[in-house]
Image (cartoon, rainbow, N blue to C red; front, top):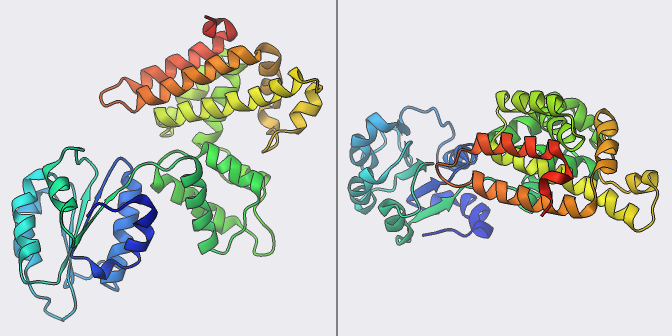
Length: 336
């Protein structure tokens, strides 16, 4: 059964009602996190060798045998299969049709949209098929809030907005950064923007911020160096595109306010989150350098970049680097 995103958490919280789970999509970290959540409901210890069997690609041939075997110590067994592709479909269907209550958990990050296995499992009522795609926008904000709430850590609005804009679309990295912030947090006070930037400011987020700020200010050498640092730290092309969008929209917000009569300082005070001191000079240079029309054109081009980076086989890193270089040229690079 194909599970809609709005029902995902409900299904995951009632894992014992299902015979199987198929987690597919582009976010490997989210696939693993959801698989671990299911495993925790089936067995107290996911490393229990009597009740948990993990099958990698070389062990796929044992799927049917393991899925129908009885536990030596009682309780339901978990058959955890990784690197799943269509070739296991026949043995999977036989295992699910067998007389057993063992739960089969499939991690299938590379499963194609037209996959026979995915299509077959979506037709079954006892298997939950759940897509795990990178979270962004509102869904990312909700995910962050859920993580912090679970740890009883409060985060103020500006800090949450900044986090949502700079974290990459990778659940494993997001979880790692959130756990770092949870350890840093004081029980009596919410995490502020300064707290958050202090904790993760020297990661790829700072490099991306420096790259986009330098590019908009026309500092080509700084932008090139910063984007290479970000890529070396693991920044994905889509994350680069989103960082560009975020930077452009902030400059555009100030330009719009100035076009309506506000002074530069008044327009800047309206930014949420506030301007980070490390990039303040570059930001002000960008505001003087760009006009609203050119910023809108650059925003549109950046959206096109993100879409291009999501296409299979696209030279995404080359496209991202070229876009940073184009931003360095300024408004004339986006004129009609």
